[in-house]
Image (cartoon, rainbow, N blue to C red; front, side, top):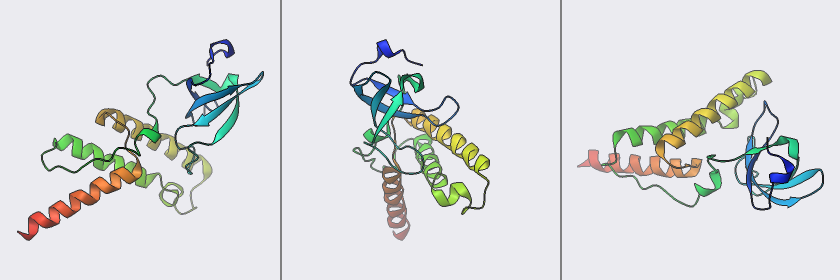
Length: 161
């Protein structure tokens, strides 16, 4: 938890309930009881990037070392057959995490109980974060899909010849 006196405008923080989902954001305004936080990444199953939240200081945490998803969107990854195989496996695993986090997969088409969904979500987001750390940068779902499509096209062209 961060002390109110240590908060500054522009500071990156995580916010959320102690045992719940945490989201990375930037402090845009300091009020007496709450800080106004602009989200820098996806929160929940919907992309609320750039949305603002009024968050009590007691729910703010240090964001040092956190991966912020909004940086991933701007930098595509080109498929290269000579990339290390472990990098290719990590990218494939990242895409599988993104797929598993889709609402249909995550909820079992609405059939799973809420506690199971929440547990799955926590496990998948932790796995995704660790995979992105292993790869060395954040990778959004669209970037991972584009990379996989490039790989598929390359493989089709290789097998034609």
